[in-house]
Structures are given as structure tokens and as C-alpha cells.
Length: 310
Image (cartoon, rainbow, N blue to C red; front, side, top):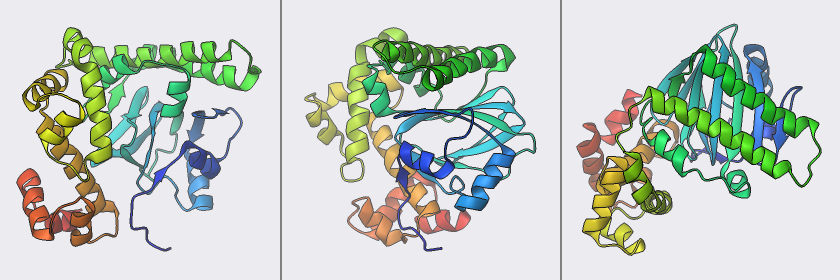
């Protein structure tokens, strides 16, 4: 098979084309609900050359609910094991890969909601994003049987609305209510599981700035690494900009920039066929040496050492 230089960023339509809709699945443009067992996963790997076994990213929120057995997912450079009554959450744009070694009795329910669908329903994601910020490097949650059942009931109601009701003038409102209920049920779980470092008052005050910064960072982090650049884009003084981002997220602007750059560098070193020099240039470093010093400063390893260690 020909090697790919870059890590693929796929669409939800592409996922549908790979796995196809099976009985019990529900799909409307921008939203997919599906249930898969180990047998189905193995059949998909045999037919489509392990489509989920290679790293990719999706511009969508992904929720995986473990009904039985267990499975493993890789997000960026972290590996998560999800057991019965557990949930795995992947944020838009995050690199992910499914482990090919599933439990024999593994059964997983999936909800994928892309950002365009969320915009279409006019859903406000800010409260949920606040809670998900608290996840940090813990994107696998133990829901417990009671909460798992409640979340699955919402999952089934959403699938039923898509599969068994013709679209009419109240369809979007019903979908908005069900998706919102699902999101906020997850928010409650996150809130009860992880103590957030950001108070509600602080988040409400600065969430708009932080959200705007995340959008800008996602667009420019490969070429721009100065605090001044992002402050000017947001029409704020660098000092005030740094203060509100620190208050709203717990991390400084510089930490967020470095996090994005190092994460992308690690992903490229681990999963792409690009050499160190090509990666340095793709991230807008003046040369390989400068990139190497930057990478070692933040990771304690040279790019070559990191590449060989994985």
C-alpha cells in the first residue's frame, strides 16, 4: 500500500462510505448513530483494510459508549481503555485511532455530530466545552450503570427520530432538544467526575474570548507562535489577552500555542512519513536545528529520539 505523507482529516460522509449503514443505525447529514460489535469491526477491517486502525481526525464530536466488553482508543498521543458502562469522547480535530484488539464480547454505541450540524440546530456548545476543558488528558469516563442507561435512552430516542419520523416543521426542534439533552447529560457526568479548575462565573465572562482564541489557534498555529499576533487578531492588549485566557482555561496563551505545535509535531513524527526537516518546514520553523531545539525544550527529547522511541 502506498504510504501517505499527511495524516488524513476525513468527513462524516467518508466514515459512512467506509462502514455503510447497517440495521439499527441512524444517519442524517451531519449526525450518525451506530452500534458495532467485534464481529462487525473485524468484517470491516477485512473488507476495507483496517479503516479505523490508522490515525485520522474528524471535524466532529465523537461519543463512544461501551455496552459490553472493552475497547481501546488513541487520542493524539494518549491511549484510553474504555470498559463496560464507560464513555470515550473525542473533540473536533483531535487525532484518533481505534485499537484493532477488541474484547470478544465488545459492543459499542457511537454518536458522531459534526460542527455544521450543531450550527444548523443552533446549539450553544459553550457550557459543554467548559466541562470538556476539564477532561484534559482524561477523555474516558466511567458513567456507571444508571447514567449509562439514561444516556443510552437519549441515544435511542435520537436514532428513533431519525429513522422512524418523516422530516417536518418540528423535526429540527426535536433533534435540538434530544442532542442538547445528550450533551448536558454528558456535562453533568464530567462535572461530577472531574473537578473543574474554572469557575462558572469566570467561564461565562471569558468564554467568548477563549473560544475565539481556539478558532484562531486552530487556523494559524502552524505559522504563528507569538502572543502578540493573536492578541492583535482579537483586538486586545497582549497583557489583558494573556490574563483572560489564563483565567478561563488554566493555561497561558504561550502554553496553548506550544501545546498545539508540539502535539502536531508528535503526530507527524509518529504517524506520517515526513522526515524531521519536512516537519520543521511544515510547522514554519526556519530550519531543522531550530525545530529540534524547540521540540527538545518542550519534550526532553530530540525529534529523532521521539520518532525512534515510538
